[in-house]
Amino acid sequence: MAAELWAEAAARFDAVALRARAASAARRAAATLGRCEGARTEPLGRLSTPVALSRRQRETAALAARGASNAEIAATLSISERPVESHLYAVFAKLGVTQRGELAEALESQ
Image 1 (cartoon, helix red, strand yellow):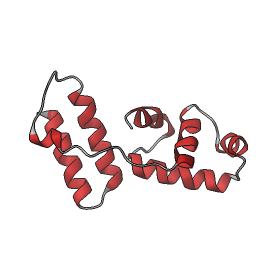
Image 2 (tube, rainbow, N blue to C red; image 1 turned 30 degrees about the vertical axis):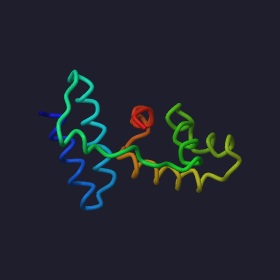
Image 3 (cartoon, rainbow, N blue to C red; image 1 turned 60 degrees about the vertical axis):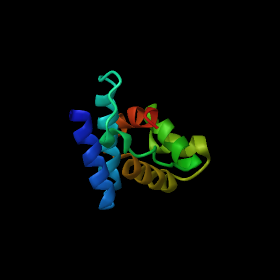
Image 4 (cartoon, rainbow, N blue to C red; image 1 turned 90 degrees about the vertical axis):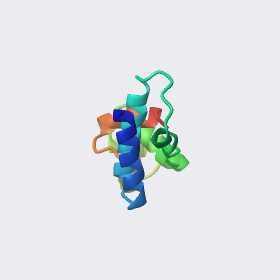
């Protein structure tokens, strides 16, 4: 039942264009569903597909998830720090995370 409620919350957040909240609720639904063997219901069937990240957003997020600072990410990707900040801002919004520590789990669920 908890997985269904999270799935329904994800659908409603998505319907009103609250993408970050929708992504967060969908991740919670999926995590809860993982503890429910073979559960298949209509709300669970409507869970959204993974969020599309650009190649550069995915690279930036992966480095941040491993603990790299913005300066280290910029040096690794041969870009300035400002684009790193922009990519991370977009990734956080798309994945519904608020802290770097949440990135690894959010990326794995993609």
